[in-house]
Amino acid sequence: MKKHGNEQPPKNSNKVLKKTDLFSNLDQKSMQTQNPKPRFFTGIQTTGTLGLSHYLGVIRHILTIQDSHEIIIMLADLHALTIPKPNFDYRQKSYEIASLLYACGLKEENCKIFIQSEISEHLELT
Image 1: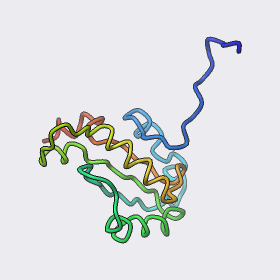
Image 2: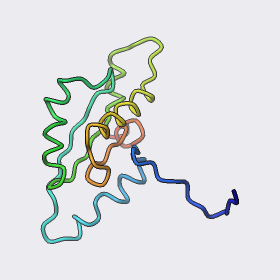
Image 3: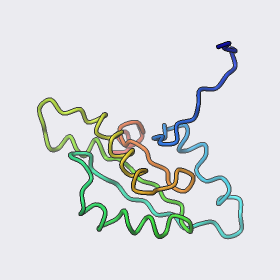
Image 4: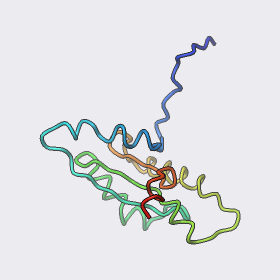
């Protein structure tokens, strides 16, 4: 297989946005139109795994509004540190929860997911 120096890696359909992705492409289409989509922002603490309460509480509602709203989900791994757990990988848990959210039916083009600790301004503002 021949590799070229300017090839882009394949896009992952279940991606968690980095800081540059989140703010450089924060739904440019809706910002340029006369009637931008309303934004829905929520956070999920990454202390465990998603359960029925998450689905009934927020995920099913997001599924119904994701075509008409700009959805932003913060995986609150810094908030998870308030519940210390020995031998617990908070970063890996964040990626697992993001994958589960997409598996529930969230569309990548309608829903942006980011990890709180990757946005340095969260710490700088407090």
